Figure 1 (cartoon, rainbow, N blue to C red):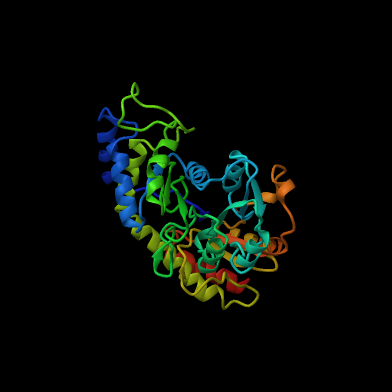
Figure 2 (cartoon, one colour):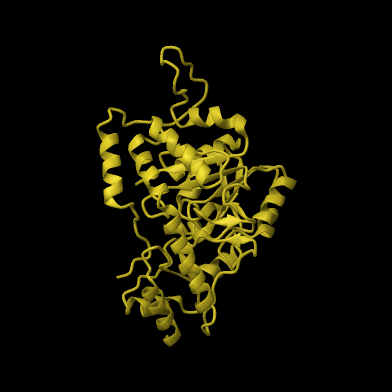
Length: 361
């Protein structure tokens, strides 16, 4: 079965010697490999800075706290995402306020974001779902007008661009995921970035129990709550090896996505996502819309290709139902959508086979 998602690793001959060196170096925890990975990641993807974390979820937790979100504050967010996006909002004691989506992409609708803003709104979290950038120009303008921090969840969107800028550069904060099945993995891990350089010290303390690295434990004073959210040298070493090959992997996602854009959009009864002209998706997944998505799942399964919805809208879970509200466009989106494989493992022959099956179907 051609999988919907797949773990990608650098060539064994490159990665294993690097891992052996770090494993027997005597320094496994946070150290120079982490700091080198941060420098290279920021440079590679055009970010102001990169703070390496134990997960994308940890990075999002840090972003919310550094943005000033406290207990009982409201955070406008999306239900169409992996659950950790919104579990973290609950972890800080805040209230997730679900805005509706643009049915053409599954991303948050700027107009509904603005409708949901109240005096208690302390952050807006947008998810670039399936690798498609949200309508950032409109949303950033809304955030600026209301003086609300904008947080970009870029877990699906490594390598995407908006208005010729790397994704993650427009919001006040952004996070990336290095979890196993993303474009790029460090087995698990995440990256936090932000515009305000004065937050750098606080971010580093947040990821390490409120302590500052480089200061003897007998001399340091903890004055804020922190967590064990640091990345370690083994994960960072995998990340360093990944950076040497990641452009090729992302390029293949993009090539397959554009191929599907061109060919699937021409098939009667099917449609594909629509997004801003200045947006360049990185197509972590590819989304098809149909009035019978289950039929597509069966059709592709018959030719050995996995297809499914992957995520469940968060407001379907009991823990989020009190915050659900009415989300008619999301319900329509979820009913009609289905994801198909789009990654580096999808060959030219595979994508032709998928398109031909959909044309016959």
